[in-house]
Image (cartoon, rainbow, N blue to C red; front, side, top):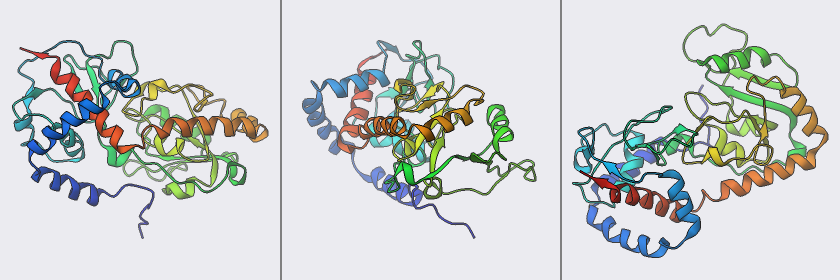
Length: 312
């Protein structure tokens, strides 16, 4: 019997809202945009995030760009509805470039993406909050750090070499509960384990975040918990601004090969006050993503900047 994880977002609800969105006229949102621009045009915190997501200057339109009207004809998946939610604020004849999926390279032209490499040269990667139903989950954790199991936990699919190596090294260690949850390939290996719900993982003091195709999808909810996040330095970022996270301030830094995992677990089991300080810092970071009105305004302003920079 498959148990539904109540901590996760509901995809059926997400799609129902998306279909309803399709029916609403653009003019309603275009008029609403004027209020957003007026309200937030001098808000330094918001503008700072807008300029972080969108580093473009001038954008030359080419044949790869499509109009918003043409975008309506594309496949209507989660990425589509997340982007449509904010394209509604603009006229249908405006053109743009986008790439859906786990993007780990910088596109040749300024394009809207979910993820990008953390780099000083990623100006062509314009971040929007895409695939939010999977990635943007926060939890209400009622278990205090001291009352959790003094171990680390991780579950996930392992098709990338660094993940495979990690689970092979730690699946049988007594200071952690590590396992892969693959659905294809050899499922008889010793490190193949049952899936674990978010609620069950919250029983552990330490949550490991490991990048997969791009970012670690559990990082958002993990940082909102009362557990301590441990991970290697991130290489990719999304709307969550992983590139701004400070090691040993928002999370505990692990070596790229995770060889210091046991050492770090032992240290923070002995220094719980330090652990709680990092957890509190993580909570403060997460808070800025919880105000939906501001999140909507930032998304609209990211696109406003993008479209203002277009030229033929």
